Length: 384
Image (cartoon, rainbow, N blue to C red; front, side, top):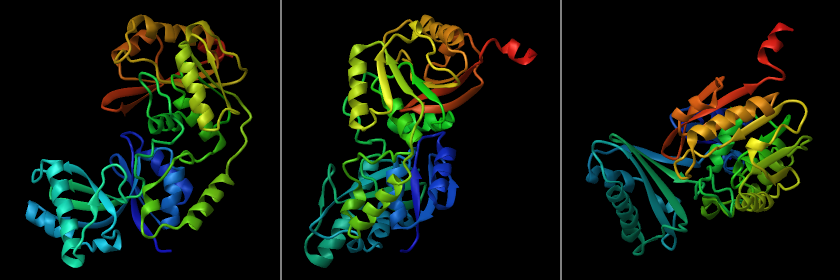
């Protein structure tokens, strides 16, 4: 099977961990960009990347690039591709456009021009044309224009890869699955200890933590990938890739626990964990974190997504102070990480973070912060 270049899209701040994931999977020529990492592999590796990457949002297969500075040169560039290699007249397609250009400023117009170029080629050659289907197309064409540089790629994933397939119930402010997995990997979580999410909401961080701990491919529960509708779809190869990934699943000998004080959140989280077939590894309990203390011996790894005050009405100053107090008084020997879009509120925690990483949760700029709680006091630790 021949190798080709691919692009994995991701969130800002995850480029380095995505590159590392790709290297560990066996990708060649891995190169980081902004919100993306390019790499080289064959068709089987494309299937594997979609199934196994935790921090990728999409896997694109570039097929053509050209320069265009008006609608005429755009149309010609699209027509230069032989679309019958990827599509037949009875199938459907859709065009997704990303623009950063002084020449083009309306993505819907660009999508329309691209669609016209594809459709006209079929009509001229075969007298019939493929249809547009925005919801379930046979082919997703991705057009990226940066100034006058146009890149055409096929979207091998379809719906974004954060749609893992296990999450049916969500809370008021759920964290995206790829964001959850990325935070866990950034925090150094590897399954070699006990884990707690003290404000677990609908359970996304818990599910991703369990899949990392057991080395379970994150997209195993997905209903479908776009490449399953491609002309060169190879079902046997796909099954082989799934089997090889499943053979690397490992046992987990510690605890993964979630708390939430809202009974509705606990029910939703339990449902989602069950859907992901992870209920053997994850325990969820209705608890107010501020009234709990550390239950396990040895180091504890904590990652959570507290309310930001964006969609939930809370007294932020008091709330963040209680986070700090609870960690200080009740959680010795804990590495606690959390994400917040309320950067001002961090000063109320009353502890000095040992790491601060800039990330985005949707359009919200956030900080992912780490607090190290020592066994006994820090001073005593350094005097001994």
